[in-house]
Length: 579
Ligand code: M6R
Image (cartoon, rainbow, N blue to C red; front, side, top):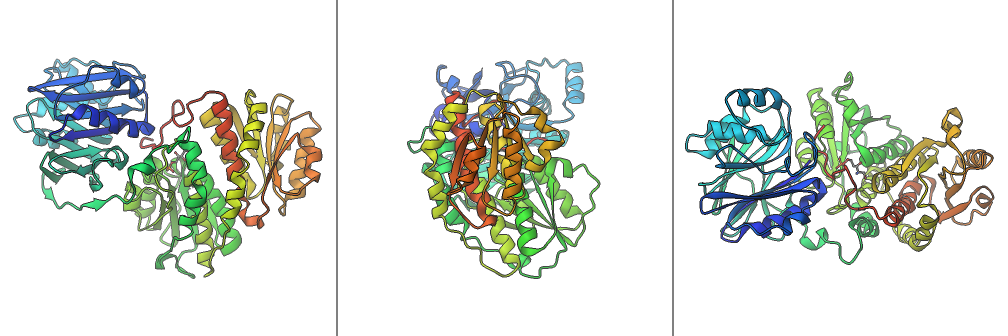
């Protein structure tokens, strides 16, 4: 994780870098720092905590600079561990996103050679190695050093005398933004989109030299490579809050539009009816994996193709029994999740066909899979995934129907009706926001939604929430039920309605409080519920799309009432580029 940015041009770098960092804060917010070159010396501001803290420090002068926002991996959040780091002569300074796995060996060697370390991070070794390797050419020094590093990195480095920023990438995202007599480096386009939409994606095993009027890309052997310039197809407005209190709420409300956009997705020949694969394996993490679980139920039901759901971080270390007759689908909003990327690489090694359902265009996974379908959610800034989830669901539904040569139909008005629940859910949240534990239950297609509802609640409100298939309660979790532990029961009028209804009765019989998500018009459910959230009636298979909305709104309002930092929950980052 972590976000990095660099600027070189004629303007003052400080404010450009800090504004860019604010847009990268979703990648981590444990500390922030900025470095510039002024009168051939390095100037640095860095501080534990949010990027905002940098604005309170005196502005740095200079037209060249690099900056960083941190998600801690090695060394706790502190001023001491904040990037940028410098070498012992204060000639070089560096920002890094990733993990250097062999940093302890490298550090020991450097310490033996008399290098003094000022942080507990893995990243600091890189700047000392570059200083040692430097003989008058920064790019050459970086080319030497990248070959010593094990692990993942995207880095930017400057030297106090140079008119160039050097970037390098292996495993963590990095792009170059092309301006008019100015250029940028950044972890992603949101950091630079107000200045340019023209970008070059840096690939793994590439080093890039960025001057204000030129960009050169090299492989790790120093051979120059061709540049492919791409144009970003979204704008700054989409990356702003537009009057909403939080990005998460804005993104919840964007779902009707997102669903309309996602309904336009087309699949190509690889997925045509009768396509040449025996089974589908879905790999993903977090919310994307819950979308995948809905996908499993839907594809198996509609297309009768067996689907295996794998959590990417587990899949990559299991005995891998996939082969060329399998289709492996990676689902990812960011397209950068390290575990999902590793799972796709493994699948490719085994000869399987790979497909990405990815939101961020030209992200790493999108570029590595055999075929990519973009899920069209637009930029998602809130750490809690909402509109990306529903766009993933739509894509999976469309895929299931595409496999049998049929068109998927969905009336987006139902989502608009579900959004009208906002006010009543706020009231409900006021009743429950002080609870410290929640259970979420659902059967069949509602089970992945129980998982997703519980994840939303815990990640933004820090309330403990556990999700179970409703039928599993009696095998243990029902022991948790008490007046103090409310249950959110997902019980639409579907083929398992009576079964879930009985499970809710079992909870009520043990004095548990129950909030039920039920189909509009279901009066009977009131008898076993303390509160009911009524959702519009849809075909059974479509309920996950509707149920997602009240679950998101409930988590949002509970977190907001608890004064939590909804868009930037503690300990988390939007894009998880480390294992
Ligand atoms: O970018 P990805 O979709 O690959 O991210 C996967 C998870 O990290 C992500 O869904 C995470 O669980 C969200 N914070 C959930 O809201």
